[in-house]
Length: 341
Ligand SMILES: Cc1ncc(COP(=O)(O)O)c(C=O)c1O
Image (cartoon, rainbow, N blue to C red):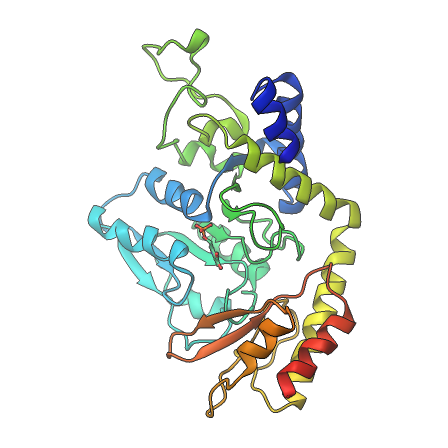
């Protein structure tokens, strides 16, 4: 990002070299997503990608969309807002912390269900929905699957081969900058998702002249209406290439082992893990004890340990820990020591 800024300040913002790096960004993101590079649009926040999908589909009055009201707001509001178009937003029924499985969804789907939107991991519990089963069941019923991928992309493998759409900003497990992100639209779904945002970049516009007819560019550009967030994309590319050079199996194995260490150590110290049992997750949130968190926040800050304090839907404060590949078992040990005294 610094290199791009320097070049932009002293010369050009756009150059052949920059466009080559944009192409490399699509390619490396596609490797993490398990899709083709042409299915990756370089946009911004997760909410932008999910909102674009919600806006773009050709909804009819009476259509239904299934969503999780306990999900992060970016994956709730775009679907609820569709009620203004006569779409029924159907809530998944589950208690806070409970994982989502096909059984939670089966009875909600019907002939009017057009789309289900889920997170690849819940942002508080870290639980992964059983996407391989859900994906194929939805496909059989011709129901689209849209995902918020921000809580796994960059750390866990893609188990969503059947998903039609996925959006994720780079600032979580991709270790990239805020405000740069990806939108995956599978090629088989291009016809069902006419771009709702239009401009000189995604509509063929020779010499930057507006044309009488609208023909969309193909590939990821199809959903990118205007100038790209080039400095953000440079940062996202660099962090994804760094992660790619380590390898996803290595990264996920390491992060899952550290998360296990967090859960086991915290349980031994008398803390409850939000969402109960469940091994296959990298996010771990600890539930506020009945006596409150006491001086733990100050102790963590003094020790320069960065945890995330998150409120859960019942009102308790959770301590969320998200160890990545750069963390070590020794650091987790240090965290656990500060947790105890
Ligand atoms: C599940 C989830 N989705 C999305 C976001 C971010 O949304 P956006 O990129 O729209 O700011 C977060 C957290 O920042 C999150 O935890």
